[in-house]
Image (tube, rainbow, N blue to C red; front, side, top):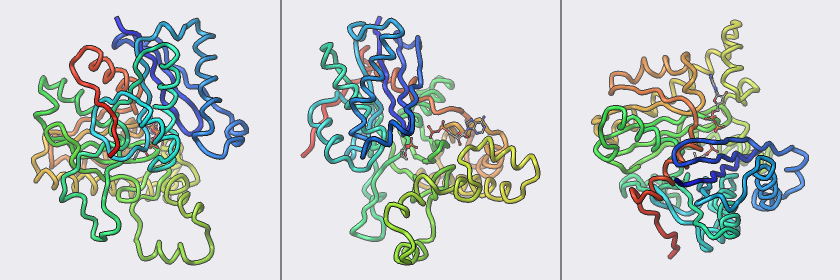
Length: 355
Ligand SMILES: Nc1ncnc2c1ncn2[C@@H]1O[C@H](COP(=O)(O)OP(=O)(O)O)[C@@H](O)[C@H]1O
Ligand SMILES: CCCC(=O)OP(=O)(O)O
């Protein structure tokens, strides 16, 4: 039996889990105090603090590092990678430490897994990084040659949930076509064509989300950038962090929005319904990538728990295909199950190289 340590760094916490094969034995969300995080100039410099808190947490719960056969971290903002597992190596760690494609807490996942795995002489892995990029060439053309489209999405949960749906119907993921909508603090839509994520729609290209502005009218955004009212960092924050539900309603918690709606707040209803409307439009867009040959639409992520939101979406997209609701972000389980497939020889872990 394999014992796995799973590490998933978020912006204000580090989630860890211990799995015995496919069975979760422990999951802990280690919260980092804002005052503690504020001591660091960027995510990477939090590495020692986060590593020490993981080791301390494991010690307190009676785990020894030597117990683990493999350590897996959430894959970060690398240059484009393939789906599935990679063995973490010095090249990957160097990239994430010194030149990630974007600042994101998940950049610490591989680094923490690697440094801890070195003590005990086992492999560290990432699985389905946010930078999984299997897009077709035609999808890379944006309309502005200087800005080609690339792929960044919630590949981990989206692929895992599509695989689960395939399993439910006793079919193989790689034989089916899916449109997956991951609805969390950030939202991404992805097209899975016979086992490959061939296009995505996320963040500044897609629907607005609890904390992100999504696709906004470009010309007006340019004017806002040059208005002299905001610096670059503030504009970035308006797009990612302080956008979407938070900008309109001062909360990024969909449950709070639903309470406002139940109490008769018309603005909350309009904005929440607009989010469902944009998600539905995005799903429709994604279905055209498959020329309408969609086997399943999968709706997942934390907000998939909301019947109000998923019903609005269902009403608009159910004409396309069968819709499966798979609530939750399921990241720890997805990382563990991917790693187990590698350890069982059902999947091959790739070597990370940069040309
Ligand atoms: N039962 C629920 N009903 C509606 N929204 C929910 C529910 N549970 C969680 N959410 C919402 O899901 C979002 C977070 O989703 P999650 O996938 O956990 O996000 P992330 O990993 O991006 O933080 C939040 O907006 C939260 O309010
Ligand atoms: C859309 C890319 C992945 C991402 O933004 O992840 P989080 O929503 O977890 O920050």
